[in-house]
Image 1 (cartoon, rainbow, N blue to C red):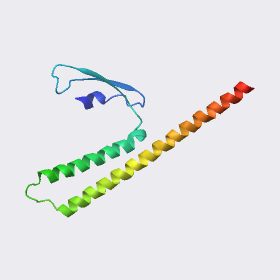
Image 2: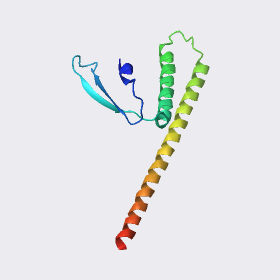
Image 3: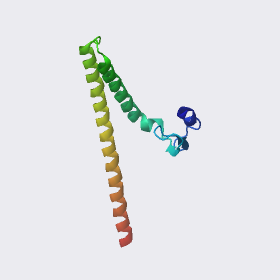
Length: 121
């Protein structure tokens, strides 16, 4: 399985190559190379994904509840909570990305200014 192939060296930055068979193309294979990231780097992304999976699970329960056995108020409250958490986490990640981009832009400007000073000297 894919999970078995992903196990092994868990060193951030290391690569793992997988040869996969697309479900819609039996017999065909596609090589995929993945680079491992440090857990702390992807933790927010993993958490956001898990929130989406929980939202989807509740939605599937609602879709398949033909006998209205679910407590709709509690289900709505759960969806509201999960969606709010997902939006809050996405906003946090978005702001962190903006800050990261600003730091990079500032560093580039400083390097350019430093180069101009060096060329003038």
